[in-house]
Amino acid sequence: MAEEPPSDRQSGSDLSRRAYVKLTGLAATAVGTAGCVTDDLSLPGRSTDTIRYGYGGVPMAVTAVEDYSSLPPAVSRWTFDEADGTTAHDAVGGLDGEIRGDPVLGASGVRGAGAFDFRDSTGNYVVVADDAALRPRQQMSFGAWYRTESGATSQTVLQKADSLTGDVGYAVDVQTENSLRAHLGVDSGTARLNPWGVATHDGEWHHIMLTWDGDAFVCYLDGEELARDESQSGEIQHSTNPLYVARGDNGWSSTYEMAGGIDDVRVYATALAAEDVAAVYEGTDDADEVTSTSTPEPTATPTPTPEPTATPTPTPEPTATPTATPTPEPTQTPTETATPEPTPTPTPTPADDSEYGRLGYGEGGYGGTTN
Image: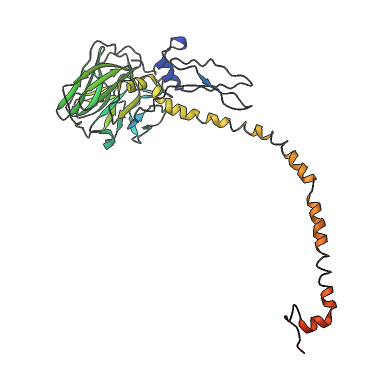
């Protein structure tokens, strides 16, 4: 396979809904022009209903997206959007992986900024240290996007097991040019899947997801169920080996690496339903994340809100009218009238010295004299 990163996929009207959503990462589109709004927001597979925000400000149009909030959160998710460095960051669980070798970072990917191209060479992979979060007991789901056209066999997408085809842990690989292979160790034995008759080395991005609900091991390819094994049951029997992306082994000296690209690796602690797997494949599972990003758009509404504040400006004018009609003036008149009234009242009282000196205040009251 060529050493150069894979080229971008076709553009324009040939893009599938999945490809468009993955390549753009858009779930809400805001369009702002001075005084006009366009309704031409028809992303593939999305509603063209629009909502306008703002008063007197920049018009906004947001495309409505179906709600997939019921999709359970992933335990770990490595988006592989890094363009440099030696760390593959876990976007949700904090279990960062170490990038080994020299894979091409920032290659053309399915979703977000990019993907890792592990190329047709050895020693290029990602390793994540063992953690209890990667070993759910009752149910689980795991998978990723991959792309290859090398024709090499046993190209590992993901392995956390005693070996690629062992009895403990879980793993999935692109076995041949027309087959996939996966296994999961459980109480009763090992659930195995080996679907044939599918194009696996066509150089296109394919999404593979495996689920276990305690009774059935199911393989989904590009959002649709491809195969299932219902011969086993019970809790999952895990390996304490690290989780490897783009690298598998036979438990001894042989390794099986991905000669191509991998993107958006996920591990869940629950068995995803068919519609949830389809949502991951279509990219609509990120609707909540992106919609939450577009929620700040209504913050543009508060910006125009000060405009209505200009309307209250004339309202203070009536307030000035009561100020100009100072009715308090009559209030001052009674105040002055009341002041002289007490003055004449005490004046006559000391006029009668004999009565005051003999009796004081009141009949025989305080301050009087007796004869």
